[in-house]
Length: 166
Image (cartoon, rainbow, N blue to C red; front, side):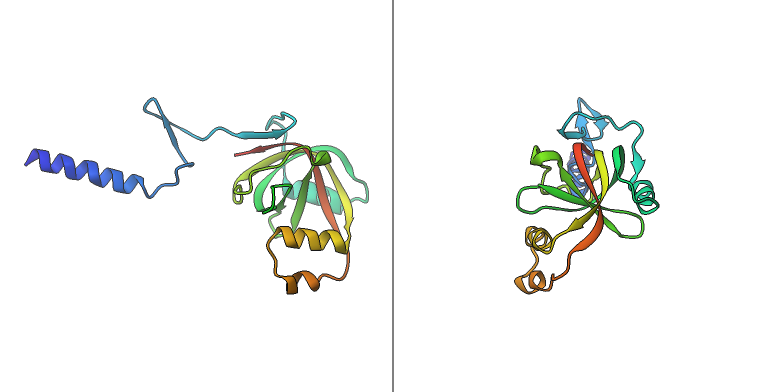
């Protein structure tokens, strides 16, 4: 009887553990740990990073670019071709496109929803129709949606020299 209960308990624990995200908790030598951050581009630290809302507010309240700043936000979208850009939305849903200095590095294409810390230059940008169409293509938009893009956009952008994804 005890053997049956033990087997049932082990099977039940296994079934319950399958419902958790495999990246949420890692067990090493019997201890739970969070996954290690992934680094891309220049090695940066998390210290002194500002919420993306603060960076957006600074840019909106000034015509000046910010030469060097570190920000944190949730990844909303990533280039589906090779991870050559990502967007981070502020608290009111306005996306900021993050590109990578000199296309010197890319991020994983499956990092949507994760937190990113990124360091570099925040600036005002005019994105051409051609580039907007390229971004739409990278994002998997239909041909009809891409053809609807006929005007350039003035937006807030960020060129990262380094990124941490957690």
